[in-house]
Image (cartoon, rainbow, N blue to C red):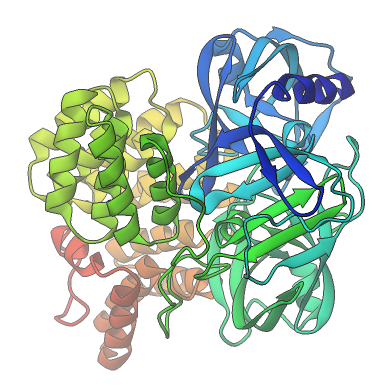
Length: 589
């Protein structure tokens, strides 16, 4: 594995361009990796055995990795795998093998006979694999997600220089970390929460920053504490899905940067040498250079929310603006990458402007149009999104994401036949995966067509998904069957099977509550809705379901309160309930 590090550094050193820092220091830029943010996932293009691939830049992964099916598709040969080899992720451990790529191309560098780990990626991953620290930790590395780039540098004469060359007059934070090695490649530095010292790991593969629950509890955190919100289930490599919460803290401090009255995500992760992961949300709000030559981290603040990209209920966040941006992009790809970062930061105005510039420069690239459609949708303009999607599909009819987006728009406009056509073409594509059918099922369910949703869930379950995914699909099929009041016995069996896998999953509990409600078992329904809300007090389906129970019990004021709370979380829920004739909590059963 050490040979891979040396070989990659040699291959990349053929690249050109240099950036001056200060004094006699020269940062020789040897690679400029384009990064496109897919939500909070930093995607980097590469080629393996001559085929295009997308890899998630994951500074928390000790080695690069491909999914099992992708390794087979790309023609990797089997390498020497130590017996019992496993990797650890937030979801536990998972077995891996070693595969060998004949040719690996990255940012102009070419390597031959390159080892990759091969195993199951995180559920729902749309990337082909992970780009780990055996690449990202070779040299000094700059993470400039807001401008769509990761840059690798070879410093010369920079032992005492401050390397934040972009900063100008901006405040620069500098942290020291223990020197990394191939066996301990993680970058871990000091920070504090509520004035108590913690250790943080810089991990671009953790899409949202997360504080270890045991550490949070030492700081006074309780899942049922004041201001704590249920954060859903999260996972990664490994079979488990973990409950997490979003909790208020008085202060988070790192370097000279202090964030007062913030909110942090908390989960029962296990970090042997750290207390918190600083994920892609932190990287989007900062420009960061990790100097492996100096064992220091340099970073500046870009602006906008650090840990949560959406406004926290109870007070709007400041709009996310990118301060101290790099030079204006020079081509369509540069504008596209910057736009994708702005979209991930919910800066829709800037995203649309940059996607528009990319389209002007490359009018026949469908992906620019599709991504601008996503920005239009996020900004509340479905008509503009539909125009962009029509244009994108005229250029690239096989674009699965564009097909799904247009199908969803057609369905919301009442064009079920048009939606069915787009959905059928999406699932027929070789690029289609389980996530495509799950999304189609949800669209049909929201449109009042539970039968079509059940058909999609049937196909998903026939594919023998891993237990966490199976539990989620079973709970969704249970809900779909319950909504149409047919096969309530089968619906109940689905929910019971889901709860055997994930006993405390609020979605499965809420779905079983709906089955009981449709069977007129009001006490059992309320018990399930209450149990779901204990896990997630803002679970819209559980709140709305309980409001229906309370209305039937004659408890009008409580029913109204639950209904208002449900619609605050999900404004469309009352309209969806009406499509299935569930009854209105404000108008009787």
